[in-house]
Image (cartoon, rainbow, N blue to C red; front, side, top):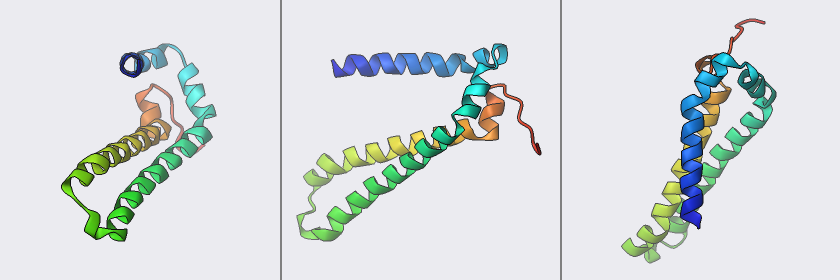
Length: 116
């Protein structure tokens, strides 16, 4: 069940990201959506970066607090999952940073005003 949902989400997100610039050229609704959701995008971006920092902090604190309990199996079991979570959150933060930036808006076909 879980893998089906992941596959569907991956297919939909790939389709949307591949066709979003084409939709943006025809329809300025995407530009308006980005402008109206800019505070939400900035908040989610900040939370993604903070979440990534907390995951790294948790990894470091476990190994600082109990260095004698560090084993290869423990690193494999918890460390890999935490690093994957860190890189996913960090990647989401970068994608949201790009979408909210003037370069991202230009990529989607929005007109960006420099001083006004």
